[in-house]
Image (cartoon, rainbow, N blue to C red; front, side, top):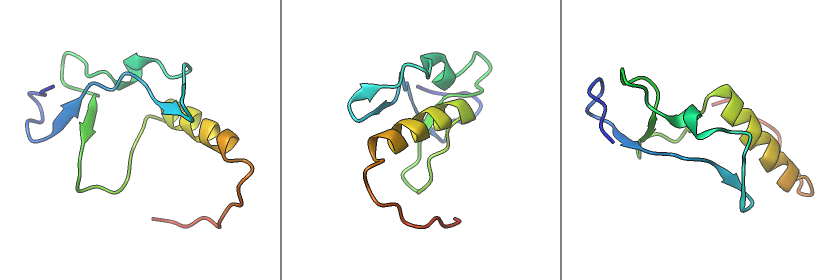
Length: 80
């Protein structure tokens, strides 16, 4: 996908997120769409170590990950 506003990025069409083999149906594909003015969308940046998601998608993914790893020990948090 290309974006006329930012032609230096590589955009992909993300249609959903799965955790543990299960699609997170609470995240609609529209969350990841680029609109007609070039806002939104999903880019791949191999030089960035952080993934950013809109809050609703992040919360759904975080909660599913926590549910799937609840039996594992947790390490202390840290700030990037």
